[in-house]
Image (tube, rainbow, N blue to C red; front, side, top):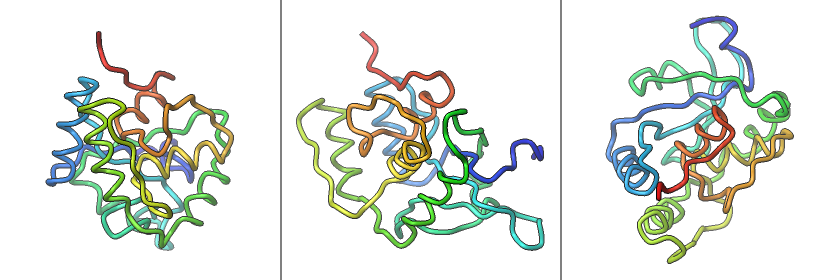
Length: 172
């Protein structure tokens, strides 16, 4: 990977293949016709030996510190955050969330909301899903995007917002 892309605070978007990723992909396709991105993490720092990068992400075990190399099977796409987001603040926010639990209830709520808009919006406090924690970290870092509910944005919506400035919306 290019050294330009490998900077602290950059975003790592992934296309997962596990059962949860397949569910996310299906729900995103049904709602937005956009389903390729199923996970997002943040580059924190290179490892001491400079052979890998530390990432911070929300996974089923909660918000955790992991390695970029462990995401290689998910076809990672590394992007700089929007210019208005301070990379240092973004990483600081992500580090502060490490240890928080994963939002399984939120995931189920999002799936229902995508299929039946406005029918259900339930989240358990002090939990995160990957796209919500990264979206909130970017907001903390100075990037603002007008979300209907930042805690229920999907990885594909976050990718769209970062790359085009517009989050996925249901086609008419």
